[in-house]
Image (tube, rainbow over all chains, first blue to last red; front, side):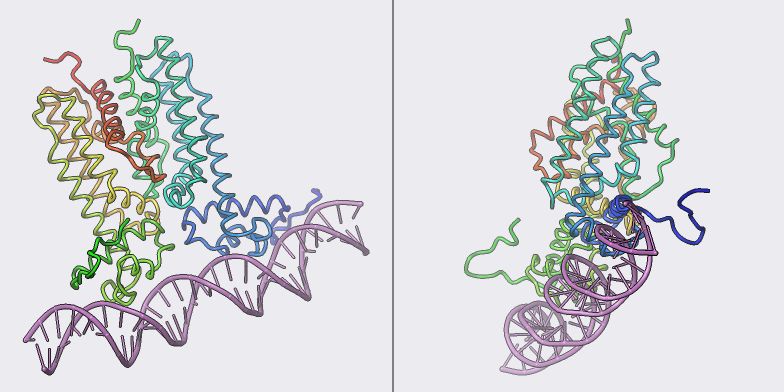
Length: 218
Length: 218
DNA sequence: GACGATTTGGACAATACTGTCTAAAAAAAT
DNA sequence: ATTTTTTTAGACAGTATTGTCCAAATCGTC
């Protein structure tokens, strides 16, 4: 018999830290759905299953809470992107299929998942109001992502897998291509299936390799 | 942004219709800057140089005003895109440079200009809250844009200028490439210079033609 | 079980916004 | 010049939200 009994009619109690986290998650969700102005503390408290006062106890006021949300989201998203970047096919056997799989991982785990959509929406919504909050993100996120990806492509080119003039441009175009037609659907809230993401990735890599693949492979 | 350029001694009186337009413009600006929830009628009235009551007289209530804003923006944007689409190089002498110029027109006049940024931001902000409002836009906008552009590319392929399997995919990738790295900058409110847009277009067309250009031109 | 820390629900003042109403001013039309 | 329409400024009620305060309930820990 477990020490902490969970009877079916009462919700399992959560610790101090767990509530802090719960509030942060709820706030992320509500801020993204409603925007900063549209969100209110009662919604967030309800969504977190917590009293309004607890929200204030943990995070001060609405603006501090919003900043905490953006920070957490930024860090998680950047971590996810770099984790996925580490799976880049450095010594590919089948370049085409391995790039497709990489693109699928990148889209599925980083760009089309909840965090990615939330962060992108928050940036679009509040980017002008809180520039300093998001310029930090840009330097740690996209800038480094581009550089890291460019370095990978440069290596592939050096190893003779690809034919690339400017790895930076290739990296950005790679990202643009694998997202090509997903943005519009995501903005409208469509549910993107695995097949849709795979199709998009396949088309993208096909074009990418037509542009940057070795024309006369050694 | 200046409200109205006026001569120092006389305020130019504006007609009924002119005020309606003025309110609509101001509302567009304010809704985009603040979001639906964050915008309030007093801001809009002040921005339009009009009393609050006049806003209500012309447009009923806040939601009706918002809908009118989206409709106007959508129509203007679609019209702009199709006007630019009409300048597509159907019988190019220098395919590369004519596609670059076309891409610059498309970006400069439709996607990176005020309307384009506003509409995109509104969709990102309120797309989930007013799905019916924007699904209409998607059908009249991106869907038709893609189809029209695909038809142009299909013709170029048929005429032997390009080597394209699937014109639909080519069209979407064309659009993705010419926007590649502009979105992030725009979301943060950066001012995009002509040179930046030209550079982006040049890189995009270079890659596009490496992927879809005739490999052994006739 | 007892104690200190945390959480809760509710009340509360202060502020802000929407949408309506009015009477007076301004503009347009006759 | 007179009449009609539109606009204005302000007051107004109703509602919503923020952030604070507090006493009672609950939780974690000893």
